[in-house]
Length: 250
Ligand SMILES: [Zn+2]
Ligand SMILES: [Zn+2]
Image (tube, rainbow, N blue to C red; front, side):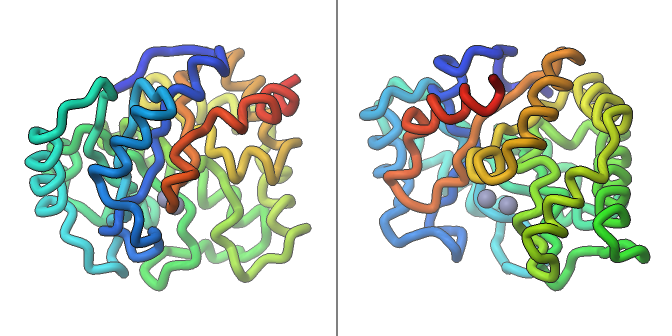
């Protein structure tokens, strides 16, 4: 389900952050206390803040319990920010999901990762070449869009979580996705009412692919969201990225 409105205006996009981690995620800094995150979001003028703690088979996080805890804490906060309590869910293989359907659908924002290949639980393709991984990612997304689980795709196609590849091979996983494949999967996602995250760390690191992703996405008419993958309070504010993001898309 589309949670946010369609826009291709970076001034609008940097007023949202749909990828942030609280201390419930082991990787987040101790300062990532929910109430302080909301306060920070309000201070920097965000319209929307989504909480997306990890939810996978490796981390032992209780996603339904944390959802209820954060909902209760949110009810006690007075804020102008639209706060979505979601999760960074795991499509850890083709048709494989870490959470039951009911848990997914109870969240305010179901953002899916399809590329956490650094985790023990993640399925790998038989063909371990960059093209093999690209094809596997597309297969996972295809299966995911046959369901109505996903509201958003977190860091789409990002090769950052492939520690077994060097920088060149990581870029090759992106180059291996053809224009047609990209158009088809973006279109299928849009039909499944799922938005695509502009993940600032990936967008800045792989500008060539980011430009393709943006251009094809606009052509197809997809819903884009913006997320910084914030693990610190400072990273909650996406506005400093706006000039560079604009430069990348041209
Ligand atoms: Zn992730
Ligand atoms: Zn994340």
